[in-house]
Amino acid sequence: MVHSSWQQTINNAYGKLDETYRLYLERDKGYFPARHHYFNAFKTVPREKVRYILFGQDPYPREESATGYAFIDGKVSRIFSDSGLSKEVNRATSLRNFIKMALLARGDLTAGDTSQEAIARVDKSPLIGSIGELRDHFEKNGVLLLNTALVFSSKAESRKHIKAWQPFVEKLLEEMRDIDPTLILFGTHAKALKKLKGIETFQAIELE
Image 1 (tube, rainbow, N blue to C red):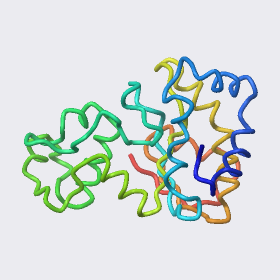
Image 2: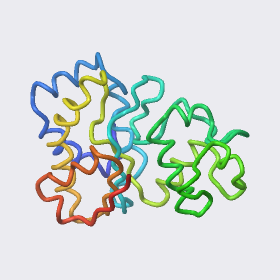
Image 3: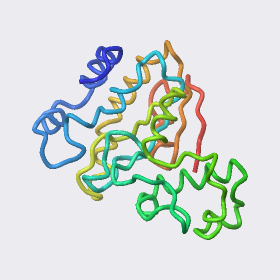
């Protein structure tokens, strides 16, 4: 289930997936997050509240980490440790890079030094400290956390899943023109969405 405000949009977008791929998803085996979780991002932010869509690549390649939200790692509790970023954040490459980028943007770090030692010296008192707080903060500010592929099976099959979900993403965006969210494209695969039909009508921000 998704939030009621998304139901028609998701039905229309899901219907654009290849029939064979839909059957694969409906078997609910051989990939993660499971079928009842891969639409999680559409459960907690009402459609009319979305101001931004933050696109990542695909779910984390660990079942316990894949949550149905881009960048939100289920194994992460604390973002920081006494030595810098927590061990779990350091393992979640995209989350680690995103947090470093945010610290750079705030002026807490310099481009010349994003080391653990430099992060350890940052005053954390005004910063978000947990992964739950981070997700809540995104959503309260109207950010939908969405990957270009909503499931993961193996690194070798990542491109297959990303390609398979493109018709879904294209239709999703078509259905969201009325609220005109800004797209935030984080990483190479997210930036590749610029090739989708109709995406040029949205304002897009590209991040490394």
